[in-house]
Length: 43
Length: 517
Image 1 (cartoon, chains in turn brown, yellow):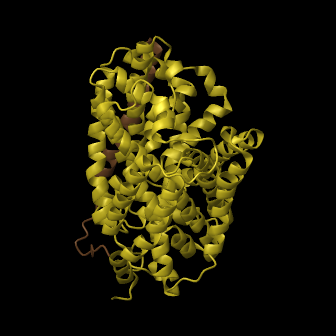
Image 2: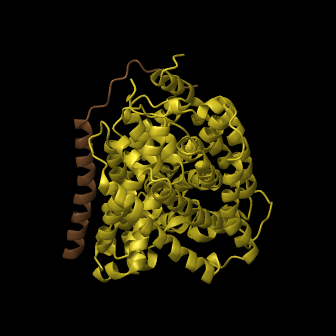
Image 3: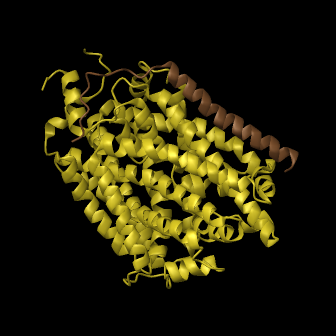
């Protein structure tokens, strides 16, 4: 692989997979609400 | 049942079904977004449109159109708590037709998408014995599909009919189980399985000789591409078609989410997970294509392809050449089946949900009423010798002049006609980890429509100039322009029908996030 191809592959991985990691971290910081009162029935 | 908004909405959740947690919803949404397009469309689109340089328009399209549009769909479903037609009707009665237009599109897509699933199921089995011998192309079109000349022919192809019937039985079974037990659990189990199975495929492909040349072809940047409008259109088109946005799926799924859930935070995870899988697919597919090119002594560009040609012609050739090819084949086709199945479930659910809400039906009743005619049409059109041509035309026209057109129009109606973006933005921001403010309104009302209109315009021009795929004019008129037009007519006619329970349109059902409680 050429240098330019390796760099662009790493850039794509960093932005996309890094973005996914950041999105998960962000979401974990805002906890899912417990909703025990909720009716969970599938009709 | 309580008559407070809170009580009414809990009652509705019990009646319509709901995802048990945010996590289940995210898996279901990823299951819908990650489909065949991630595996067989993205790698080639990236390769054709600048290689490594495509990363830039792709990310720009994801951030300026994909994720903002995803948020728009989420806001509609989560606030108005209904299927696509019900959400639009609760927003403003006159827009209900847009929802039915989306339902019509899903109906059309489901009937041919199932056929591709059926082919993939058969090919997972063919991989074990490499049944295509030394002529994968001749085998696929001749022996397997028995495709004749373009036209319509009713001769059944049993090798497709039986797996197609099985695919429909599996879809009906999942949808009969309901939102959480059916849709939620299926995605919660199969999405991790897909990542593992596809991950093994990628690692295996990377160790094949020639893999590095494949990756080199995919990632070598052609910076000149960045000044080409068609490359930007390809990026917006890829993001748009890949994310399952604009045709009712995300509206439907987010109507099943608890009313205080952080939707924008969840949307970022879904958007990046979808692109993350696409990137993984690009690496796996091009590593395998690099091996193929080296084995046949040609350039990677000579073997690179997409869609049906990639999955059912190029991959079988790779499987035949590669050491332990059968394993590679099973991994590849099982991945296609899983990715397609969870998307297919979401497409059919849009139709079921719309019919349920309108006619106040039980899940069982609506599922049977919707899936039986769909399955029959699917079997009639796609298990015959002319299936391939009809499928190809329908897919192209429904994508371009169905999904894309309804998306652009609904975006413009919501942002410029009804001017509801501030309300929807506030709804999303309330209690969320991300503030959906002016930046979002600008992207949804100006930037994303420009990007999508560019894609639509280029595609329209192309289809007017040259008959798609060189097919006969009458076939394009019926299965192309005709089908795309028919769903619009259907949408606006369906909106004229009365709601069985008119109370369903009442404002008490709208999720105002506990403002009144």
